[in-house]
Image (tube, rainbow, N blue to C red; front, side, top):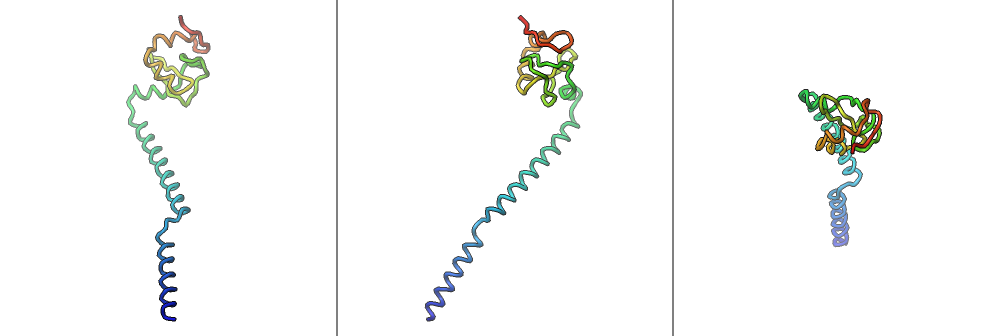
Length: 124
């Protein structure tokens, strides 16, 4: 009888220790979610402070574009994509990547737009 009681107590202790030692998936997921939300907030705060520290030339890259169509691909300008200043004019682009392509050869791509920046006309 004493052996049975000791065995039952040993099993109960073992399973109790196992349940406390295991990670609770729901708690862990919740903690990861909170961590990700915190990181997003920190990044937004960092970006806000970074934007406040920009000099005038960088500030121009976030200004409103004068053109309505992309000088690289001809699509409608997306206000979320950064602008590039060339010859005192801020050029807007339809998608990310077009801005970096424009920077490599701004003279070529700036000629793809008509005088008021509303029509795409591929230069020859």
